[in-house]
Image 1: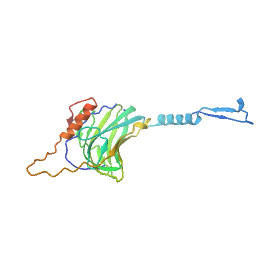
Image 2: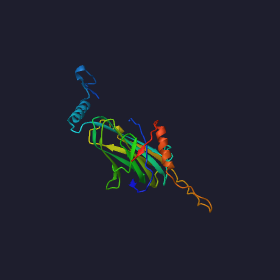
Image 3: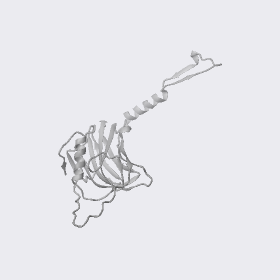
Length: 248
Protein backbone atom coordinates (compact mmCIF):
# COMPACT_ATOMS: atom_id res chain seq x y z
CA UNK A 1 0.00 0.00 0.00
CA UNK A 2 1.32 3.38 -0.94
CA UNK A 3 0.97 6.74 0.76
CA UNK A 4 -1.06 9.59 -0.70
CA UNK A 5 -0.99 13.06 0.81
CA UNK A 6 -4.70 13.82 0.75
CA UNK A 7 -6.00 16.16 3.47
CA UNK A 8 -8.87 14.45 5.34
CA UNK A 9 -10.43 14.46 8.77
CA UNK A 10 -8.45 12.40 11.27
CA UNK A 11 -9.54 8.84 11.85
CA UNK A 12 -10.73 8.32 15.41
CA UNK A 13 -11.60 4.98 16.88
CA UNK A 14 -11.72 3.03 20.16
CA UNK A 15 -11.18 -0.70 20.21
CA UNK A 16 -11.35 -2.95 23.30
CA UNK A 17 -9.84 -6.14 22.28
CA UNK A 18 -8.58 -7.95 24.99
CA UNK A 19 -7.28 -11.23 22.05
CA UNK A 20 3.97 -38.68 21.56
CA UNK A 21 4.76 -41.56 22.39
CA UNK A 22 5.78 -44.33 20.12
CA UNK A 23 5.30 -48.07 20.68
CA UNK A 24 7.44 -50.64 18.87
CA UNK A 25 7.20 -54.43 19.03
CA UNK A 26 9.76 -57.05 18.13
CA UNK A 27 8.56 -60.20 16.39
CA UNK A 28 10.05 -63.70 16.33
CA UNK A 29 8.26 -66.19 14.04
CA UNK A 30 5.04 -64.15 14.44
CA UNK A 31 5.26 -64.48 18.23
CA UNK A 32 5.54 -61.37 20.42
CA UNK A 33 6.89 -61.76 23.91
CA UNK A 34 7.11 -59.35 26.79
CA UNK A 35 10.86 -59.09 26.32
CA UNK A 36 10.35 -58.15 22.68
CA UNK A 37 8.05 -55.20 23.47
CA UNK A 38 9.71 -51.81 23.92
CA UNK A 39 8.05 -48.51 24.73
CA UNK A 40 9.50 -45.05 24.11
CA UNK A 41 7.88 -42.16 25.98
CA UNK A 42 7.85 -39.55 23.24
CA UNK A 43 11.60 -38.93 23.38
CA UNK A 44 11.63 -36.57 20.39
CA UNK A 45 8.72 -34.59 21.80
CA UNK A 46 10.22 -34.39 25.27
CA UNK A 47 13.57 -33.36 23.87
CA UNK A 48 11.93 -30.64 21.80
CA UNK A 49 10.08 -29.33 24.85
CA UNK A 50 13.32 -29.26 26.84
CA UNK A 51 15.10 -27.33 24.09
CA UNK A 52 12.16 -24.92 23.82
CA UNK A 53 12.16 -24.33 27.59
CA UNK A 54 15.91 -23.82 27.59
CA UNK A 55 15.57 -21.30 24.77
CA UNK A 56 12.99 -19.37 26.76
CA UNK A 57 15.10 -19.40 29.93
CA UNK A 58 18.26 -18.39 28.08
CA UNK A 59 16.58 -15.64 26.05
CA UNK A 60 18.01 -12.30 27.08
CA UNK A 61 15.12 -10.52 25.40
CA UNK A 62 12.44 -12.24 27.50
CA UNK A 63 9.05 -13.63 26.49
CA UNK A 64 6.16 -11.61 25.09
CA UNK A 65 2.97 -12.90 23.50
CA UNK A 66 2.17 -10.24 20.90
CA UNK A 67 -1.30 -10.12 19.36
CA UNK A 68 -2.82 -8.11 16.52
CA UNK A 69 -6.46 -7.63 15.59
CA UNK A 70 -7.90 -6.20 12.39
CA UNK A 71 -11.25 -4.68 11.42
CA UNK A 72 -12.27 -3.28 8.01
CA UNK A 73 -15.45 -1.30 7.30
CA UNK A 74 -16.87 0.88 4.58
CA UNK A 75 -17.05 4.64 5.09
CA UNK A 76 -20.40 4.32 6.85
CA UNK A 77 -18.97 1.92 9.43
CA UNK A 78 -20.62 -1.18 8.00
CA UNK A 79 -18.60 -4.44 7.97
CA UNK A 80 -16.82 -4.84 4.65
CA UNK A 81 -17.26 -8.14 2.81
CA UNK A 82 -16.87 -7.06 -0.83
CA UNK A 83 -14.35 -4.87 -2.63
CA UNK A 84 -14.01 -3.17 -6.00
CA UNK A 85 -11.68 -0.66 -7.62
CA UNK A 86 -12.16 2.83 -6.20
CA UNK A 87 -13.60 1.69 -2.86
CA UNK A 88 -12.62 3.70 0.22
CA UNK A 89 -12.28 1.67 3.39
CA UNK A 90 -11.51 2.24 7.06
CA UNK A 91 -8.94 -0.15 8.53
CA UNK A 92 -8.48 -0.48 12.28
CA UNK A 93 -5.43 -2.31 13.60
CA UNK A 94 -4.85 -3.01 17.29
CA UNK A 95 -1.54 -4.24 18.73
CA UNK A 96 -1.41 -5.77 22.21
CA UNK A 97 1.19 -7.40 24.46
CA UNK A 98 -0.25 -10.31 26.46
CA UNK A 99 2.99 -10.73 28.42
CA UNK A 100 4.59 -11.90 30.54
CA UNK A 101 7.41 -9.46 29.69
CA UNK A 102 7.43 -5.99 28.16
CA UNK A 103 8.10 -6.10 24.43
CA UNK A 104 10.71 -4.14 22.48
CA UNK A 105 11.41 -3.72 18.79
CA UNK A 106 7.71 -4.07 18.03
CA UNK A 107 6.43 -3.21 14.56
CA UNK A 108 3.32 -3.96 12.52
CA UNK A 109 3.11 -4.50 8.79
CA UNK A 110 -0.26 -3.66 7.18
CA UNK A 111 -0.57 -5.64 3.95
CA UNK A 112 -2.77 -6.14 0.91
CA UNK A 113 -2.81 -9.12 -1.47
CA UNK A 114 -4.28 -9.36 -4.99
CA UNK A 115 -4.79 -5.60 -5.10
CA UNK A 116 -3.04 -2.24 -4.87
CA UNK A 117 -4.13 0.63 -2.65
CA UNK A 118 -2.95 3.86 -1.11
CA UNK A 119 -3.38 5.28 2.35
CA UNK A 120 -5.10 8.66 2.29
CA UNK A 121 -4.76 9.38 5.98
CA UNK A 122 -4.01 7.74 9.31
CA UNK A 123 -4.09 8.34 13.06
CA UNK A 124 -2.55 6.55 16.04
CA UNK A 125 -3.81 6.24 19.61
CA UNK A 126 -1.33 5.41 22.37
CA UNK A 127 -3.91 5.48 25.19
CA UNK A 128 -6.63 3.05 24.14
CA UNK A 129 -8.54 5.46 21.92
CA UNK A 130 -9.00 8.51 24.16
CA UNK A 131 -6.65 10.69 22.11
CA UNK A 132 -5.48 10.32 18.52
CA UNK A 133 -2.47 11.75 16.74
CA UNK A 134 -3.15 12.50 13.09
CA UNK A 135 -0.35 11.41 10.73
CA UNK A 136 1.67 10.12 13.68
CA UNK A 137 5.32 9.65 12.55
CA UNK A 138 5.37 6.08 13.86
CA UNK A 139 3.87 5.08 10.50
CA UNK A 140 6.37 5.35 7.66
CA UNK A 141 7.11 3.79 4.27
CA UNK A 142 10.19 1.63 3.74
CA UNK A 143 12.40 1.50 0.64
CA UNK A 144 9.94 -0.92 -0.99
CA UNK A 145 7.14 1.60 -0.49
CA UNK A 146 5.49 -0.63 2.13
CA UNK A 147 3.84 0.90 5.23
CA UNK A 148 5.46 0.07 8.57
CA UNK A 149 3.95 0.95 11.95
CA UNK A 150 7.02 1.28 14.18
CA UNK A 151 5.68 0.88 17.73
CA UNK A 152 9.07 0.13 19.33
CA UNK A 153 8.12 -0.53 22.99
CA UNK A 154 4.87 -2.25 23.97
CA UNK A 155 4.36 -2.82 27.74
CA UNK A 156 2.42 -5.78 29.11
CA UNK A 157 -1.38 -5.45 28.79
CA UNK A 158 -1.10 -2.28 26.70
CA UNK A 159 -3.07 -1.87 23.46
CA UNK A 160 -2.12 0.64 20.78
CA UNK A 161 -4.36 1.50 17.84
CA UNK A 162 -3.76 2.48 14.22
CA UNK A 163 -6.61 3.72 12.01
CA UNK A 164 -6.12 3.90 8.24
CA UNK A 165 -8.23 5.44 5.50
CA UNK A 166 -7.36 3.46 2.38
CA UNK A 167 -8.48 3.65 -1.26
CA UNK A 168 -8.31 0.57 -3.51
CA UNK A 169 -6.48 1.65 -6.66
CA UNK A 170 -6.46 -1.61 -8.63
CA UNK A 171 -7.25 -5.32 -8.33
CA UNK A 172 -5.17 -8.06 -9.93
CA UNK A 173 -6.74 -9.39 -13.11
CA UNK A 174 -8.57 -12.64 -12.55
CA UNK A 175 -8.64 -12.32 -8.76
CA UNK A 176 -11.92 -13.27 -7.10
CA UNK A 177 -10.79 -12.36 -3.57
CA UNK A 178 -8.65 -9.71 -1.92
CA UNK A 179 -6.80 -10.38 1.33
CA UNK A 180 -6.11 -7.43 3.61
CA UNK A 181 -4.73 -7.40 7.13
CA UNK A 182 -1.69 -6.90 9.37
CA UNK A 183 1.17 -8.85 10.99
CA UNK A 184 3.01 -7.98 14.22
CA UNK A 185 6.68 -8.61 15.05
CA UNK A 186 8.94 -8.09 18.08
CA UNK A 187 12.33 -8.88 19.64
CA UNK A 188 11.10 -11.28 22.32
CA UNK A 189 10.31 -14.97 22.05
CA UNK A 190 6.59 -15.31 21.26
CA UNK A 191 5.03 -18.47 22.77
CA UNK A 192 1.87 -18.18 20.64
CA UNK A 193 2.35 -17.12 17.03
CA UNK A 194 -1.24 -17.92 16.09
CA UNK A 195 -2.32 -14.38 17.02
CA UNK A 196 0.52 -12.58 15.23
CA UNK A 197 -1.56 -12.06 12.10
CA UNK A 198 -5.15 -10.99 11.44
CA UNK A 199 -6.87 -10.35 8.15
CA UNK A 200 -10.12 -10.14 6.20
CA UNK A 201 -11.09 -11.80 2.92
CA UNK A 202 -13.10 -9.55 0.61
CA UNK A 203 -14.99 -10.77 -2.45
CA UNK A 204 -14.18 -8.88 -5.66
CA UNK A 205 -17.20 -7.22 -7.28
CA UNK A 206 -17.72 -4.85 -10.19
CA UNK A 207 -17.21 -1.14 -9.44
CA UNK A 208 -20.24 1.01 -8.74
CA UNK A 209 -21.57 2.71 -11.90
CA UNK A 210 -20.23 6.19 -12.56
CA UNK A 211 -22.86 8.85 -11.72
CA UNK A 212 -24.42 10.67 -14.66
CA UNK A 213 -23.28 14.25 -15.30
CA UNK A 214 -25.12 16.89 -13.29
CA UNK A 215 -27.83 18.58 -15.27
CA UNK A 216 -27.89 22.33 -15.69
CA UNK A 217 -29.44 24.05 -12.70
CA UNK A 218 -28.82 21.15 -10.31
CA UNK A 219 -26.43 21.51 -7.40
CA UNK A 220 -24.38 18.33 -6.72
CA UNK A 221 -23.79 17.11 -3.16
CA UNK A 222 -20.47 18.24 -1.81
CA UNK A 223 -18.12 15.73 -0.13
CA UNK A 224 -17.75 16.22 3.61
CA UNK A 225 -16.16 14.46 6.54
CA UNK A 226 -19.55 13.08 7.63
CA UNK A 227 -19.12 9.59 6.10
CA UNK A 228 -15.84 9.12 7.94
CA UNK A 229 -17.36 10.29 11.20
CA UNK A 230 -20.27 7.90 10.70
CA UNK A 231 -17.84 5.03 10.15
CA UNK A 232 -16.00 5.81 13.35
CA UNK A 233 -19.13 6.21 15.47
CA UNK A 234 -20.65 3.05 14.05
CA UNK A 235 -17.62 0.97 14.95
CA UNK A 236 -17.47 2.50 18.42
CA UNK A 237 -21.08 1.59 19.13
CA UNK A 238 -20.66 -1.87 17.64
CA UNK A 239 -17.80 -2.56 20.01
CA UNK A 240 -19.90 -1.44 22.95
CA UNK A 241 -17.95 1.65 23.95
CA UNK A 242 -18.42 5.28 23.05
CA UNK A 243 -16.02 8.01 24.14
CA UNK A 244 -15.40 11.49 22.84
CA UNK A 245 -11.98 11.19 21.23
CA UNK A 246 -9.52 14.03 21.10
CA UNK A 247 -7.38 14.82 18.08
CA UNK A 248 -3.84 16.14 18.41
